[in-house]
Structure formats: C-alpha cells, structure tokens
Amino acid sequence: MDRPESITIDEHGNVIVIRLIGDHDVSTVPELRTKLETLPPSTGVVVSLAETTFFDSSVIHTLIGTGEKLRERKQPLVIHVPVPSLGERILRAFQPEAPIPLTPSLDEALALARSASHMD
Amino acid sequence: VGRLDLRVGQVEELASVRHALDEWLNGQGMSEPPRAAFVLATHEALANAIQHSGFSDSVTVRARAANEGIEIVIRDDGSWKTPDEVPNDERGRGLKLIRLLVPDAEVSTGVPGTTVRLSHPFTGERTADGST
Image (cartoon, rainbow over all chains, first blue to last red; front, side, top):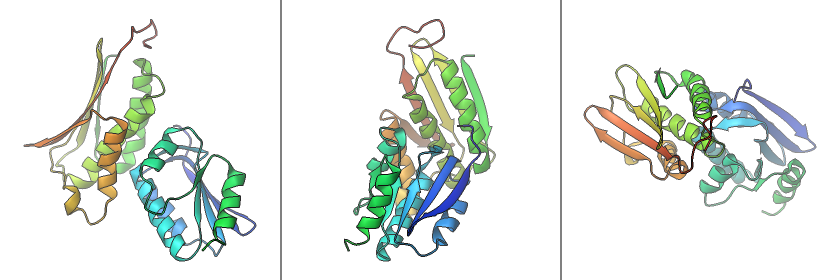
C-alpha cells in the first residue's frame, strides 16, 4: 500500500481503459469522479483495479454510479479485478441491481465491453 | 509494541493512518488475510467519523494486542447520522462494508460520540515472530 496513486486512461480500439494505480479512497475520489464524468465517447469502459493497492466504499459508490450513467448511454462498464481478492469480494457484495461484470482478465474485460454494447 | 495510538482529522491523513496500522498489525503477527480487511474496516470507520460525525477535534484510533487477540477502537466525539438522514447511500455502504469485513464489529453511539470496536482473536499459538 505504498504506491503513489494515479489514474491513467487509454483507448483500446473503441473501449476506454481506466487504470487506478496505488491507493484510492475518499480523498482521491473527486479526481476519479471528474475523470469518469469527462470520458470521451466510446463503445464501452473498463476500469482496471489490477494495480490498485487499496480502494474504499467511496470508490465503490463512484463506480456503481458511473455504471448506471454509462448504462443509460448504452456504454457498458466492466471491472477488471484480480480473483480471488478482497477487492473482488467487496465488489460482489455491493453489486447493483444491474450487476457490473467483474473479470480477472483484461482481454476478457475488453471483449465484454465490446460485446455487451451490442446486447441492448 | 503492543499498542498503537493515532489521531486523524482530515481525509487526506487516512492513507498514512492505514499504512501505519497495516505495519503495526503485520508486526503483531496478523497475517493476510485478514489484515487487509481490518485495515479497510478501520479506514471506513475513520472516514465515516471524519465526514459525518461533526467531531470537535480529532478522531482517535487505539489498537491493542494481547495474548487473546487484537482490538482496534475508533472513537469520535460527534454524532453519526443514521443512513436515513444521508441523501445518498454512500455512508450506508461504509457501515455495511465494516459489517461485511468484520462481522463482530460493534458500533455504539452515546455521549460523547461514536465508538467502533473491531476484534480479532488469536485462535492458534503465536510463533516467535508474532504469527499465529
């Protein structure tokens, strides 16, 4: 839990990948929220927690809210998270009514983000 | 070695408190898991207290290690809002997360303030390096 926090945004074809690196909590979530609210147009969005050393309920709250907004715009949100892990466990416990797909594979996350957009 | 006392007043201080607690718990022989769960539960209690209690000075974390286990007590002198008083369910998630991570967590509200008590019993014999 000693890596400086940062957020990177990359485009993989028509899918945006947001990587949360290091610790992310209530003190850093405003930056995350701003980045999520100003994403460029895309087919889908992947949030990668593979390099996240810590995240709290404020991050979960933000991801769920973002998932709902993206869903309204027919842009699926997929979360890339190591399995098994504490992060995966708590994300599963807080899944919204329309669950956000969780996967330990970035390739699978990208595929889900692309395919899910064609299912609506 | 067997105790840790910290104070926090701003959310920007939470990361350093987490790291200090994680290091202390590791030194007390709490393995992984459940160490990360206890660090996260403590963080959630602190974040709730800082954001929602209206504390007057600071929020305290007191951790103690004994032969029977580890106890972490988070205390403020304010008053947490109940989930129904919060316009969104963000804080409700914090409390739910504490219960998920530490099912035996005790949350007591009184005068003054709210106390969250997290306990972890050592069920096995601890080794020379403190592990169980």
